[in-house]
Amino acid sequence: MTPEQLADRFEAAAKRISPAVARGIDHTATLGIARIRGNASGRPGPNVISGDYRSSWQPRPARARRLPYGAMCTLATDAPQARRLEWGFTGIDSIGRHYNQPPFPHVEPAIDFIGGTLLASMRFAVAEVLA
Image (cartoon, rainbow, N blue to C red; front, side, top):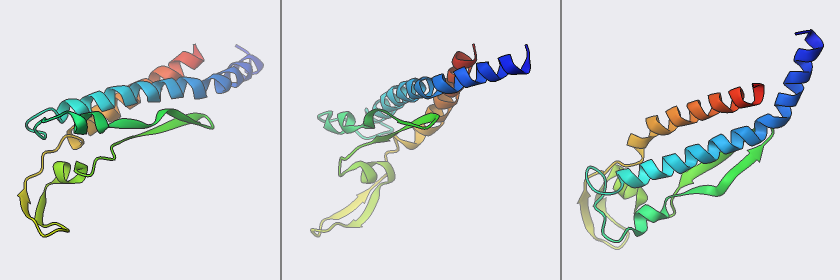
């Protein structure tokens, strides 16, 4: 392969990398949300009563936001009990109730899985555009 052919191949790959990375981010977000929801489905995570908390976990934005040569999304919830469930709470709340609530981690145990899935997705994206 000549240097010119290699340069053409890299130029073509540069045009295709952003969509490939966005697909990988979307895939990782879907699996990450599933893992967090699964961890929040009873002990050692929080007990499930209605499922509202579990379903509050969503990727934000819904599809990966494209960036130059990349993409991003955040796995998040707007549920007010999220921090207390993950880290616990001991003390008096804003309306005077006393709590000694232990932590029920469900996000932290999913971090290694999400990181590994993201790494594999990015490797796949690079292999896809260089093929």
